[in-house]
Length: 270
Length: 271
Image (cartoon, each protein chain N blue to C red):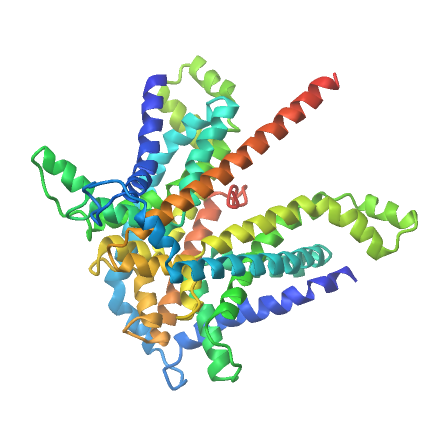
């Protein structure tokens, strides 16, 4: 009866995974007295602007991450083995520092009297308003999540044999066709994993937007946080927004997975 | 082309590291300014180490990381063994639920656990104040899936006949299990444990929703420090964390490199 050893975990899973998610659904469809209502769901519509901004800013960040990470992952994957190891370590090192510290670093660089404005001032430019803008939020997300794009891309690219690229070139492909017809199809699973690993945390972040976007560039995460721990205390509305966010993310994962059917989240656990 | 690649690599590395180096440089800055360097000092490090709140939250963080990684390793390893023995249908249902804390946005996991703890207190009158216990429960919850996902592949690779051989040679099932199965899946258990430990140390979002005012973890304390705008102790703290992380990563890499060399040496010897 080896199955029985899983019993403690099954109880744990029921109490700490299933019941809490059930509570979110329950709270989303009830009011503060516990009676059934659809008001919370209807109220979410008022925040369509915030939701749209979250999707837009995190989509932009994901695209920037992909464009910046793709060449780098390829370059690293073509290096000698011990060099590959060093560069991977360099990519992973910032990841191991808490993201609050990484975001704080940009806060100090971007502020009005910060280092960047000061340096620009020396050559007679600025000061520019950089912090508390949507650009700053995108920058913060790209900075925080780009390693999650580089690593899965690298892990599929390192398996692409150099002969395949050489063969394509011998057969008359120029660099652009090598990229579109050889590299991208062969690294599709890494692209899909990378997009998911950047987009999901970016779309649900609440700290980066608060620290770099000021109070004016709220995202879905901020909205949820305000309902549970902020002044706007309303766990019912907060649950409704959480439910929506969860559904959006699940749809997104489902779409990504159906694009990439053969691989099962490769590199997810790097 | 090669040159261009090199320049590009270093540009991205600069993007990744310049903000961190700026933090490190200003951790030695005399004044509180974050743009003018007025003189060299260690005073922020001194202040950091006399800051009660930071020290106690560091203690909490280490304690919770240890408790939650040990318990989630035990719970998760047992779960993996049990799940592996189940039929395909039960297995896939359980695994899908197990994946939920990994794929759900962290903020949803955080608020759902917060709702649970509040609900237990208000409706079932279980005296569960937000604090070390709720933090540990939450950390175990998000860590167990990583342990399970690390152990299951090892169980799959396991050769069933080795276990049966142990039985034939006179072990009872428990002995066979302890002497044959556990050592075989040990690498998976260890990597699950390490993953759980580091995730627990680093977690902010989930901890933020289940910590109380008196028992914070280090990331939660860091967050409240960043809200005060100017606190040079954060720079000092970042520097220390950077150096610790760098040291750990370099050690892991040296160890890895040595293992690969040994392996290659063994292969070439056998020819």
